[in-house]
Image 1 (cartoon, one colour):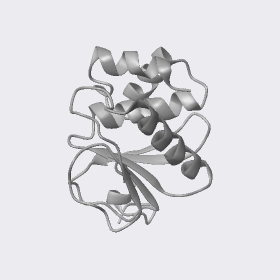
Image 2 (cartoon, helix red, strand yellow):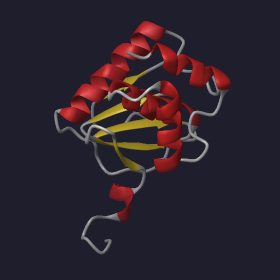
Image 3 (cartoon, rainbow, N blue to C red):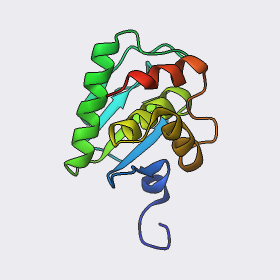
Length: 140
């Protein structure tokens, strides 16, 4: 337990979005405390809680743009409804960082600011590729 009585695994990867909702980013195979909803961006174990998987190749962009945007909006709405939402990919950096930046865009940040924002608050290498940065321009 940490100083505040919250387990460290509950705090790892937590990010408060610009609009105030909290989400968790992580590696898909990493043990995690239960969430209410998981957005999975890579193959891997299914959590015991409700989840939705997006086909999103490593270092690339989602295979189905409409499905990805629908899933991101669903996760974003759930976070703002007070649910514990997590986003996970294989390494927990590129695709996860891109999804977290997409949440920041949905909160009103321009894509370039969203990338810098998520890199400063989640992981310095989040949104790893130029195509992931380009893809964020179409998030609405």
